[in-house]
Amino acid sequence: MTLPAAASFIQQRGPRVLTVGTMKRPVVELSDCTRCEVCVEACPAVFRMNEAGFIEVADLSAYPEDEVNEAIKNCPEDCIHWEED
Ligand code: SF4
View 1 (cartoon, rainbow, N blue to C red):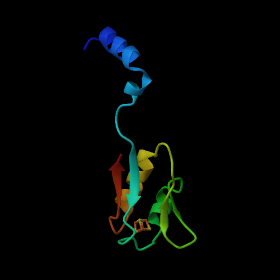
View 2: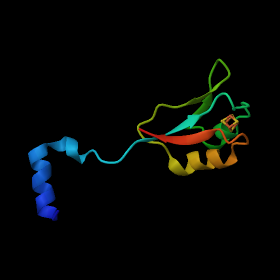
View 3: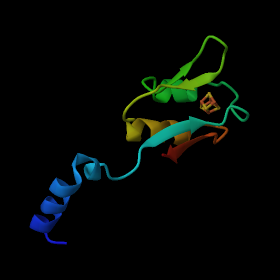
View 4: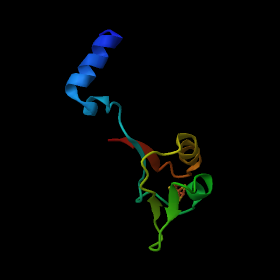
C-alpha cells in the first residue's frame, strides 16, 4: 500500500486503525520470587514490595524497557518476564 493509499485507508476506517503493536508488561512469577528486592533496586519505578510482602508491578501505560530488562537480567530466580497484550 502506498503512503497516500494508507492515509486514505486510515481516514476511511477512523483513528482506531492507528492502534498497532502490542503493550508489553513485566510480570513476576510470585511462586518463584524469594523477595530479595533486587528488582526494586534495579527499577523502583516499576517494582515495589507491597504491604503483604510481595513484589508488585506498577500499573503504567508504558514501561522503561532498559530498567526492566536490567531487573530481569539480575533477578536471581529468573522469575520476571515480559508479557504482551
Ligand atoms: S529480583 Fe526476582 S526474586 Fe528478587 S524480589 Fe524481584 S522478582 Fe523476586
